[in-house]
Length: 295
Image 1: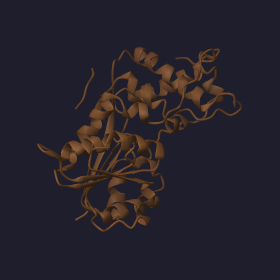
Image 2 (image 1 turned 135 degrees about the horizontal axis):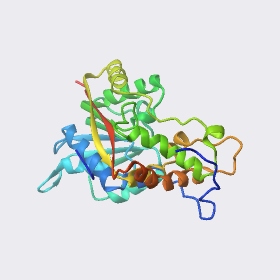
Image 3 (image 1 turned 90 degrees about the vertical axis):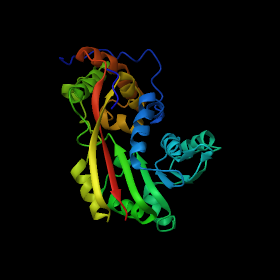
């Protein structure tokens, strides 16, 4: 829907002479225009209308809530209400300030805490989980979270994520391999001898999500893939996300001096070189959209 159309060798680290990146988690990615367009695109698919109540799981700094509020807007203002569920106090405070004049409520907590919050059955018309469902790795835990969501959701649950097994398409798989190799070289590490296996944060795919939603009691479960074409700044921002760095370029045994911030900076610095090597301006990547009925 959106388009903005090696042989490893040991080298001296190229980032030692300047400060390493501050790893600031997901904020840089969420603030990119294309990221907000992706959230807006999927939010429009949910079917939210003025007057609805919506639970926004993993609300972050309020990007998904802002998109939900667009769906609640009428000529005279917003009709309905959004409840933001976010575990990090820092992010929740940003969202509160950003949306201070909007009809929102904020709850600090994890999706795993929902069952302990004594929310009324059918408290919300819709529940939305934007770019976060992949964090719940254990299947049994996810099953319990989804049961809690189903209990407090009157109509429909919708989620989307790009961290899943069908994410890579086109030349993106090639990019991912070259990207990590290039980052190792920038750190002066020989990937043939000293590399730590990367983890892709892509533990489930469409079939697995459909199965766990069905087990949690949802009906009419459906999934589909949407492809977005990502410019290099998307991967530069993702490389400042601590959890992503720990998976893509884990701590290197025998090199405690190479910090998380240094590994993050190496990935940031490598992005445009790999895009140039592949002779591309954008790379395709799939998002998985999930919807299910509580009724």
